[in-house]
Image 1: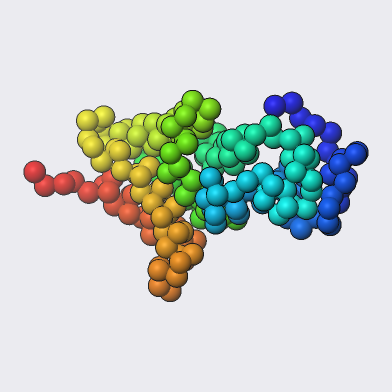
Image 2 (image 1 turned 90 degrees about the vertical axis):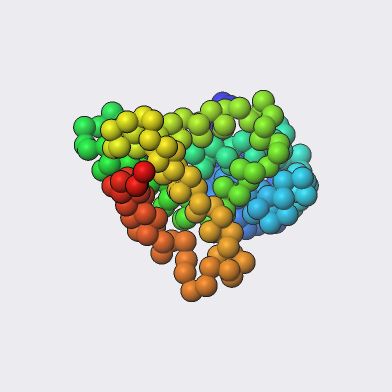
Length: 215
């Protein structure tokens, strides 16, 4: 999507007046739309959220959304990209680096877990949407698969063989953060916080890689 000239703070662009003053996180109208959609998708579900609801949450006219996103699917695709694209870029850098495979694997895990834990909304919960099987979300699925492949490559290099099934687990352990965030939001994680468990999860991956299972 071609970039658009940024509007000054507090405006939605020429001819696109806001209904109320800005009340969302974000420096641009596009970022505010994404913030509102993220909250609504994670609270009310994707099918339970309309573009009118998103517009109302931002404080713009519904038609204004279509200057930034043609469809609700485009909004979802943009949000999903924010959950994987930074980690994919970091993974590519680590795959090119010369450090020990385990060191790079743990670096990637810590980076990824921190991203998932610190995000304003738990967008990873949207990974289970049946809509994501459609071709229109193929780019996201490909990016997530690339990220999973990077984990597996680094884990296999650490283990010294591609046939060790432990190589499949670090990526899944990292994504367990998504469910734990849901537990935390429902008050089902006790006194713990997901942000406070980063070291624990990274440590678990390290132990998994260094442990030799009995046969």
